Image 1 (cartoon, rainbow, N blue to C red):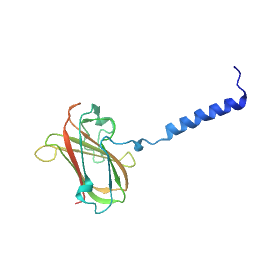
Image 2 (image 1 turned 45 degrees about the vertical axis):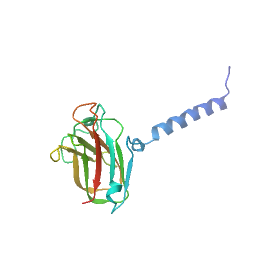
Image 3 (image 1 turned 30 degrees about the horizontal axis):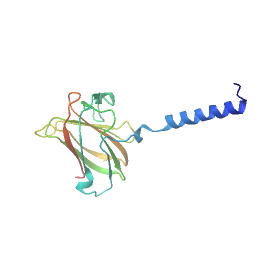
Image 4 (image 1 turned 120 degrees about the vertical axis):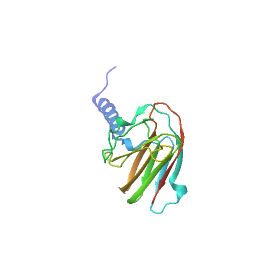
Length: 162
């Protein structure tokens, strides 16, 4: 079967449009395993609390070996972020706590994808937390991990504005 030039151009244009759409979709648009937190200044404690569970075998060090303070990023989680945090305004300080009653890790990737914050070993249970300043408005991806791959731990993640 012979195709005329106009049909070939249309088919090529269609393929180009599909490829452009697929490659132009930002990674940050991913959904989260356990949902999204959308916070404004003065948010209530209930608005800053979500739950989930660990259990992946993806090494968080593949995202970043160290955070912006040169702290080691460790643990295993699912490749898809556990939570998406959308900050509608800049926050001068935020504290993000994991409560599982066990040893967890935390990696937070900022809107620019190069600002990384990692947390580990806070308190008696050694759950992870990040307490930091200068949070810019935007979309953050958060992973809650464990030191060994595939370990399932239920947790509550709390975002606080101290």
